[in-house]
Length: 271
Image (cartoon, rainbow, N blue to C red):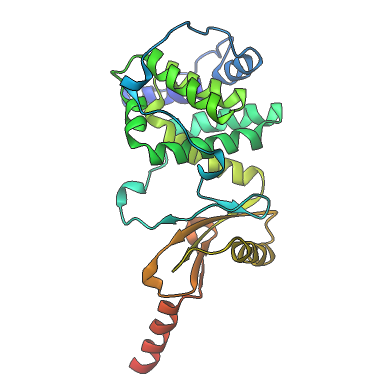
């Protein structure tokens, strides 16, 4: 219902007409997500395509798909810092509506953690396979081919039924181009629902698991958050040490890098 109402509101704004209140449909997208999860084979299509012609073979380890770590989960290899403005994504009302509906459905079924893990895997896979991401977002590609790819991905990664059926729903609604934004919005809502503080730790070299754990533990003491989620990055220009950004919009900042210390000394000499 939330997704349908959001779509109607956006369409009304684009037409520059007065918004009209519509009667709720007998079966909204939230209910559809729940219904498909209970019956994953409903509306399944018996189609076969040549996967090699549409994408490279999907083969990856779930444990290496994400780029985050926390006090409750295994740490993974950090990603290199890439200076690009393309990574910044504006908040989308459409993405927010779909993400909110999925969070609500997951809460009612006790599947929030499982679906969150799945979406982290999807995000990591699409980031590493830009060609596949473009293929799924391409409106010209047949829906059956997209669903076949998603089905294979879900099978190899052992996705929860909610995750699989939600992505199939995005294909039906022609919203696959919004998938990355929806995952971002879902992540924000998940952290809010689970009292999770997200922090980015940038270091000159890859931090060991024990080092990441100690940083997360210290941040937990400082913020009082129930959970701490670290996003490790590597920036060799720091020369040594690390920098931590946390809080809303990175308002919290801790600089323990050699580069930062040199900067402080330079300021002292200038004064």
